[in-house]
Image 1 (cartoon, helix red, strand yellow):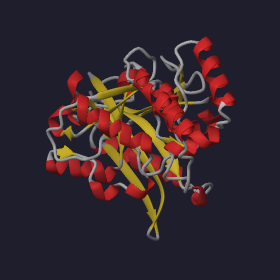
Image 2 (cartoon, one colour):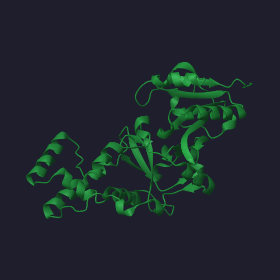
Image 3 (cartoon, one colour):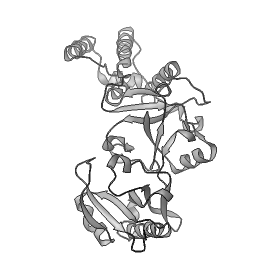
Image 4 (cartoon, helix red, strand yellow):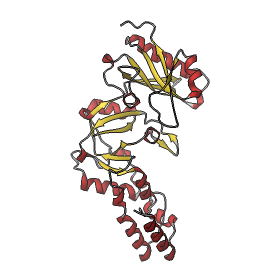
Length: 315
């Protein structure tokens, strides 16, 4: 199966150089690990053979939509995890869970199969005078210093934990996964043009592009990119990000100009992107033309296809 993970540029470079990528212990703050994370590791050890030296897993997406897949924390993009890697794994190499049901684990919440089952459990909590905050404190020992330890409370926690297995399923429209390692030969496609604007030692912005064989390719293919630039004639603009401290200073225009130089140097036909309505004028100002509605929608609605054609391109 094909899965997707978002990693840092540094992680990608390590993968390319060493041929594999694992989650090293030095990147894990064990004092801040939740009981939920331990549950994942325990189940992975039981269900997925670990052929690497990894102690902790790498998270990935098995099935999702673009708005959920993008790495975010509290609704904001996570800086530093901008490289999207698509790779192939065997079914037995990935531990799959339902993304939405997994959120129940993070708060130590009972996972019901029916509304009746939920109502009955809620009544039991009320009769034993147990609050959801107290349950959360038990599972999130990384955030709470103390938690209840009385017998009736622990009995409820054990009952809740028996339902956690219900999040281990492939019957969901949003599935997340964990693997012990990523091997270089598993990689299908990697974004391959990454430019950074560095002003006085500070990153002012960056731009990421991927090679595509035609600007009429489907959105699913475009967002994955292609490894071999020599076999493509367009670069798909995946992301243009500007540091808030440098907005309004022309950094975006400079990065687009730099990407155009790459296209000209590599003798590619042009740059292709999809944007929301309010950004059309910005890209028109930078030499792009409106090519109509994008073939697919993702995120918050329809996107507009914008194209910049290389004036020096020759068939």
